Image 1: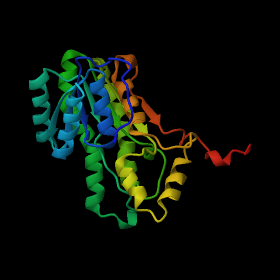
Image 2: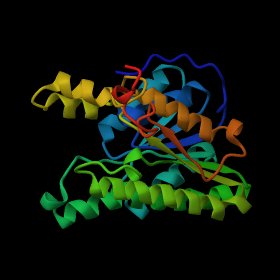
Image 3: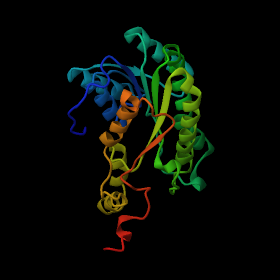
Image 4: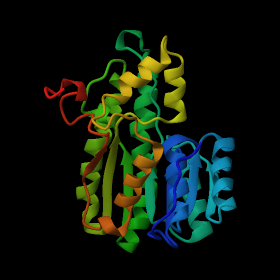
Length: 271
């Protein structure tokens, strides 16, 4: 299922865009929207069937896309995929480091291997993929990287120690990458989503004792009284990657419906 979307601009005509983890949820919606605005989208996805599916969807909608089966934590796998993108379209203009994962696991229950896996997948992949495209951007003195952080990087939540640590690391790495890349025209920003109703999150809701009550309690933590959609985050990615954000770098755009703004809506004394 995808968000209803009608493109209102052509911000990425003839731009080559890599989206990691584009096989579902936020990544799927992001890839689709870049293509709808003229981008040539390279889908980097470990799940071959999922990557092929979004690429075929883009092509059937009249866009350009290729699907590449990539392990974003593996330097050789990423280097080969980036080389294929350059061989196909000549360059890379935008990188969206969207790939990541994080099921809730309490520290007392977590294995060392599980901790290391989440740090490697969520944080390590940012370094691996960004390093692969960095020389391309530096040579032409222009390029945009957008990284997937999270409100869990600054707001402690039960069961998300490893996930939150990785996302906090991404926010810091983003700022460092921005100051290091500036002299070469490389802009680096991050997005911090709140509670986004992706298919994966819906599956988590469905296994709760009272799914509807759990859904409502989570949604009502937003000042707007609802979950975010994958499209809400995708729009942030598109803005930060576009020339409209040409003087924006080193920032972390929070897209959370006001969850981290302050008190919960039901604490309003006017009620």
